[in-house]
Image (cartoon, rainbow, N blue to C red):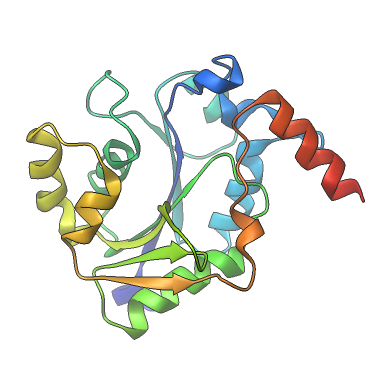
Amino acid sequence: MNNQSKVTGVILAGGLARRMNNQDKGLVNYKGRPLVSYAIAALTAVADRSLINANRNRERYQMFGLPVIADQTDSFDGPLAGVLTAMLHTNAKVLVVMPCDTPLIKAEHLQKLLTARAVNDADVAVAFDGERLHPVFLAIKTSLKTSLQDYLASGQRKMEYWLEQQNSVYADFSAEPEIFVNVNTPTELSELEAKRQA
């Protein structure tokens, strides 16, 4: 990997996880390991450096050995705030972004995002499963930092709307949409564990 294509990875673990009884989702165990550890394994295989964006339990996240960065505000402003925070903490040209609660995502899926962005010389590649976008899975140029700061400063939070305004391409995951299953509730967690035992 040459210096021009340096990549920083960020795991978004900054939400409140209300449906998970306010437990910190990244720290909930899936098959005996914290959910965030699956994201770390996937990201560190494709990124030169990885960060965890967390607004709670920062000491526990630090135990995973990666820098832990909090949003610029303490108002839980959503995924874009985490993306901006990561942009402010890296010199890399490209950021690869994923959430902390999707244990089926592997390094090759993140590589597909990076490749889609590079091949199309786009500012952003966003995951698309054939039916819907998954806007928290991104390969994104850090040069969009000012645009993102302005968007958040205007009081807007919606990720899809901001992405529509950028030079974006879709990375096509229609052959395996199930990889985006994320764990929002204790029930979903046990269902996924049971399904994956089969």
